[in-house]
Image (cartoon, rainbow, N blue to C red):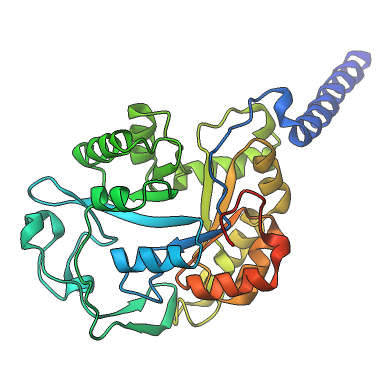
Length: 328
């Protein structure tokens, strides 16, 4: 019996020691980890260049967002049949061009023009009307890099293609953008390939990485574990609970979304990552109350389809601007 009590006391002491150590390191993570030093700190991020104000992922959209003082452009990349890296969210042409086939089926010069209208993925009731737009071409990633040499850019590598990853990396290196670019994908495979190819380019958390992060956070192990990623870019689940993003979702899905919102939207988690130099971007937020919640949660920045609306919000709420932000 005495041995049993000794074992219980030892286990209890180990547990208490673990909890206390975890809490201390959670608050002071630099005891174990070197803080990441990013050369950008975006508050205002334009999703696809601002898909609610221009034809998405076009040079016109990027120039418009930058004219408003956006801190970062969020873009997506694919590879054409002749091996050119272009900026596009979809691999299929049906939604963006109303044409059959995929980007990979066309040489760059043969790609059709983009449609003048498109509905937003994150604001279902809104359709952008670009009637008469003079810019309906898919831009090359190299063209974007040449035009905006000093602007931080967030690149989503849309498909698991070694050639695409290698060519995007080559362009980043060619234009000396390793310190002002973040790249990755929801796929852990793509993120791991990107990091292995060039660890000097900041990477984002994949879905698998986010799940791991949550498990580490709630188990108390997070302060002990090194993280290779530099940015946490996650959707804010509460935006799906309205009818303007997913018009028809059942009660079970809504319950799951609420649980995800509670689990993931945690200020202590965001603050811990911030202390380790890891920035948090929430997407895709298009309403003022969504901006407000994101910044109150401790997000570094917000991705939006409406750069004008976010600029106006930040103008009214300068407390959410960061010293290193480029917003004027």
